Length: 329
Image (cartoon, rainbow, N blue to C red; front, side, top):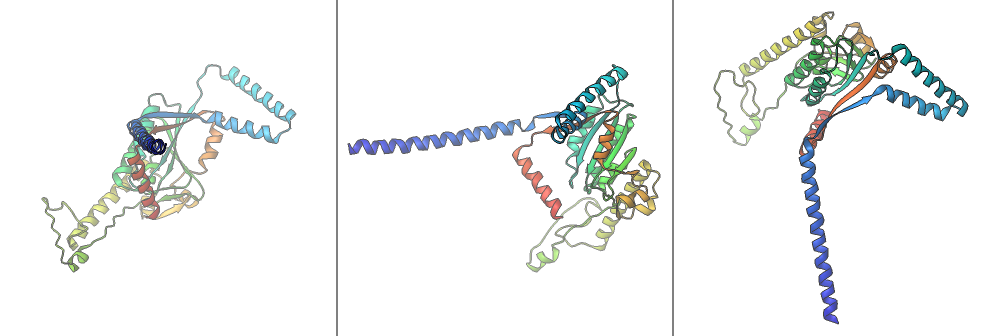
């Protein structure tokens, strides 16, 4: 009897271990399958007209008496019928809404380029594109590419509106200035047309601990400032020369796309809030994107387009680290 009891306990422990291993294996299998599906991508398209109307009906259903709500529903149906009679099969203006949230590397440009490529396959000169930008800037090449993507819209003769609710500074404004029209919130931050480079130097620390640092290069100006070597005045002058050249290119780009600004006055690296930005002609109108799109939905079909791609776990971790660094910096 004692043998049977001990055997039962052993069998229970063995089955528990096997079950645990099966669960772990299943978890690993699911993780691998999700990682393989990490590259799946698609366009998410939302009709904002329907969204606004649904919100209105839900709110009315809660705040109006039943008779009043039925009356509103009846009026809405009549309005729809009337519009169908007037417009028939005639094409209405379409507005395509894109959302760009920029980090230091302008990582969102990978989605932006796909969204623009997609909408340019159907959009024409009767349509409009609204891009909501929120970015404090970052790398020159990253935001240069993002601005070039927006330029594709204008090159097709499609009216481009940029909306800035919070911030479009430095590289963010490089993108915004491409637009036919810029609208901004009263306290949105705009401008910062300047170039910045900063780098720590550990040469004296290494020297203190008798650590040698060697770096070989071919080409007189292969590098300017360095993290670990001893920086010279010539190195600093070369980097400053490069910064000035980049700044001049930035100024030329803004002037080409927004000729009404006094470039010497605004290209000092300063930023301004919406009201002051309007005075300096950095923007055309003080208005939030919500207000603009709600009004536009009365006369046009408004579609929000998002390019979605499932990110692998490693990319999510890296993206989180970049966002955290942005906040700290």
